[in-house]
Length: 113
Length: 114
Image (cartoon, rainbow over all chains, first blue to last red; front, side):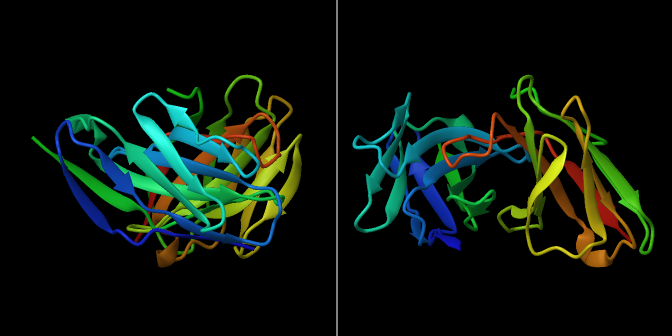
């Protein structure tokens, strides 16, 4: 089985600053993928970034980067140059050799003007 | 937008009734997964359909059932509704079922059970 832990229920960041959202995971699968999603108040889950367990380099997608530390089982999301539109819930998820995604409980990010 | 659509957007039912939620997957995607997201929680996996067959199920009772059609659209049926079934129901589609396959979510259906 897989498990995701997000220990920050809420985070605040000043506009244009960078912020790191923490995610640790537990899995017995040798191969797995780690995903981050953004969920605005409208409810739709928006895919942000993916990291494979065998990827040597940290994933980046525009202002999003994933700080992957395999030995520590962590996959933190870094958002650079925060914007007001980044205010939302952020979910970390893992998918192993099974068919389902396991999600954490999420972090609520508020960007302050 | 992902191209995944869900209907209806909102639904109100009473306890004991039955409900059907619908999902159209993104073009080219043959895999659909359904999730239940209670208020303040992360999504919980209900089941997945791959090429019209159930391909994995989470810890949900049999009154949660589903279908996938030849065009890869899907339905989630819930019988004998309970108050705790009130949640956001999310559908996600992906190209295939591997661990590298990203799931793309629809906007969700908010179900309220009174």
